Image 1 (cartoon, rainbow, N blue to C red):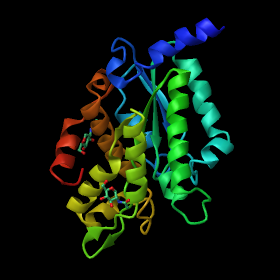
Image 2: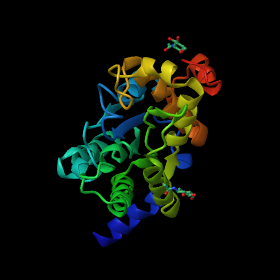
Image 3: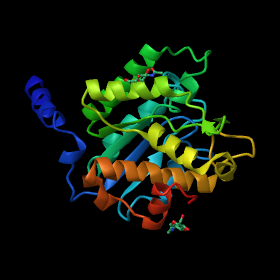
Length: 249
Ligand SMILES: *[C@@H]1O[C@H](CO)[C@@H](O)[C@H](O)[C@H]1NC(C)=O
Ligand SMILES: *[C@@H]1O[C@H](CO)[C@@H](O)[C@H](O)[C@H]1NC(C)=O
């Protein structure tokens, strides 16, 4: 038993995206809060429009989730179970978005999750994904789209910093969705970004097209940072160019 356990640990140390077997399709497991979840997040748009044929995934985004409730409520156990199911036929990737995954709700003063706990929780999700046979990728929180004095309010900086520092300290892959989404939202301005609102005055959640557009940002960041993912990704060069140019997509 012990010998087996040791043997199993060796390949895990190399489980970074660049070591992915490019000959296998990808299975995405998306962990997060309402900004990833169906009806309001980018997860469904991601799976529907950015994943190449043969690859697939499941959106486990959970409205209202914190990094603590995602585990205590049973969502995380489903992610781990799915890694076991799908790793036979796919390279399994787990995105862990903390803004909003966790960041948006953890940020609420009554969430019961301190910033230190948030960091520990992210680190544990990543470590457990790796042990189960998947590649974790931490995602900094999607920006809210509330403006003040003509600029988007940057009120997730602590969660962003915490996510990046956990990733760097533990050699976990990450993408900086906070920065990229803030830049895009600033480029568009408040009246233009309102077209992506889930409800007219909901500047956090995304309507269906907003989910598609912000999923494209997520996908472009992933492929930019981990080129091995390109084969498993469906491009939309028109949309990517509009986003890069700061124009509405
Ligand atoms: C985030 O990190 C940067 C540099 O590491 C620092 O300058 C900034 O104050 C931090 N912001 C917050 C809100 O922690
Ligand atoms: C690609 O992006 C353009 C610009 O946003 C959009 O009009 C078009 O529907 C997208 N194509 C697909 C296949 O999603």
